[in-house]
Length: 175
Image (cartoon, rainbow, N blue to C red; front, side, top):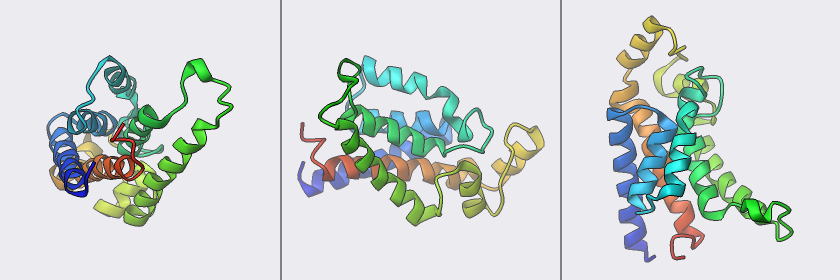
């Protein structure tokens, strides 16, 4: 993929991630859907990944104490492109090490931008404090702080963009 195409595809992933999080919520699934659509890889396998990510929203079941769902979604889609296959579980070629290397790149982008990959800590960084979004009053404060206006929407958008760029830089979008 040439540089201009990568930039356009990464921007499309960003725009879709932002829009999907704003409209549908569910950071992990929104990052995955953005990657499916921007990379034109929607199929039964990626739909299964999308479905499996349902519980990853808000740090896992909206508890906010786990990994950012957008980070998890990006990680899963990198694994889709690079991960080891179940039929090669023993992985003598060490394919999973390539996956780890690419996910570390996504991890570093999160660290550089937010200082963390943890949902509640990202909330603190972008909205000034963590929110327990299972509580209706806290959820309203979360929304009032811009969670689905420009805060979490941006996190999802960046996760989709960065995942696209990492896969492209490593040549996985040319295959």
